Image (cartoon, rainbow, N blue to C red):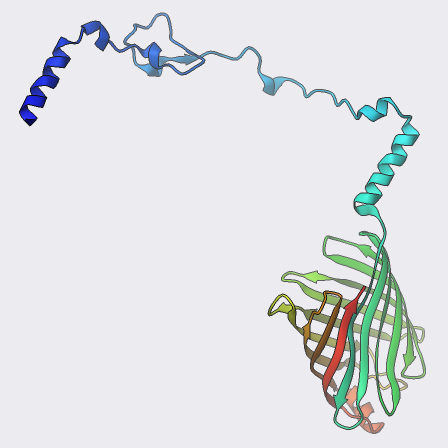
Length: 301
């Protein structure tokens, strides 16, 4: 059977006219391709040439902008007002926020206490007015430290703002007023950071570094480690602050976001006075180290 099929195939090939077997490159030419008239019909297809376009668009100048049709119907003043309104509605409008990252009750060894750390701002993406406040106290002794900052904030990049203004302390006494300059922003991997320098009306120079990170365990359960360090360029006996690093606070808080704007939390906090600041605390009969179990609410509007 196989031999018979082979014989039939050979016979069909032999019976095919020679003209039908002639290879015609023109039949296989791509659209827009022409054959050179000097080449024979059976020349290889590699000698085919592509016909040049009538005009080269790459060398032509771009068309002139025509503008909006409305510009031909309305005066320039009306169009400028419309453009300004559009820019404001699509990202240029002022906004605001009130955030309390910490608002908590602290269970301590001895007298329990409370603590807050929050800020409010109003403005746009580039310039804002910012109010910051933080402090702590005890249920027996009242307010221990408390301050308010009024700052002008200017964006210096996609993730950082330069801030400058005034800080007013209410405790400890005697109260101080400071000129303030610092930066606030987000480091890679979403570490929220702040760094500021304070110059008091008595010529005292202080500094502060703080940061925290929101580690999502689930979409609603979030663990927030936090650190804050305060520094001083000199000893300030009146307020019990020593030169160098005066104190460090470490915190770990676990919150559950009932809503993004409202999240109760609990955790632990540890505060330690260092160096000469610790000596001032011992002289005044105050604790050098404080460990607390904390319960609070993180909220924003």
